[in-house]
Length: 146
Image (cartoon, rainbow, N blue to C red; front, side, top):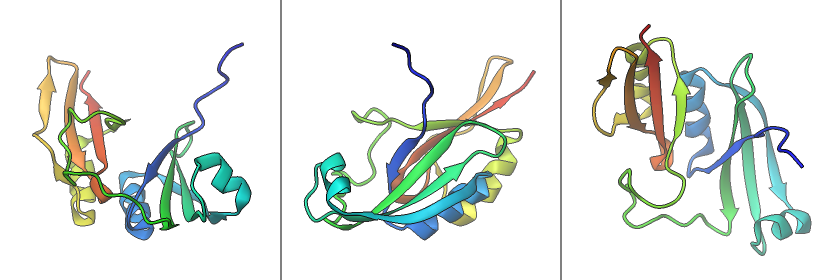
């Protein structure tokens, strides 16, 4: 038995419209948006009386997708502390390779993006940074230099 592919990464957000705008500014495209509810969905996620909405974002001409979800019921749980450091257990970050890291940051800042540390050069290979987006999501950006 082998894995066929990684379909998507799911991220729970507080404001679905803001998250869509953020990832659109990053360069992703909205593939679709729909409500998710009913007994089948409750069984999958293990939550009673579950009502949510998802937006599927895709990378143009590539395989990667993000499933952004907001929960109407039950309400999403905010972690403590709300802004968790990079060494918090659980999903750490999602990394994107970009053509121009400074241009990407300039496009994302109006959507609330803030650097976690700073843009740093790794040898002569990459410029790298972590940034925090909507709902505290941490993204990593990598610009190949050679």
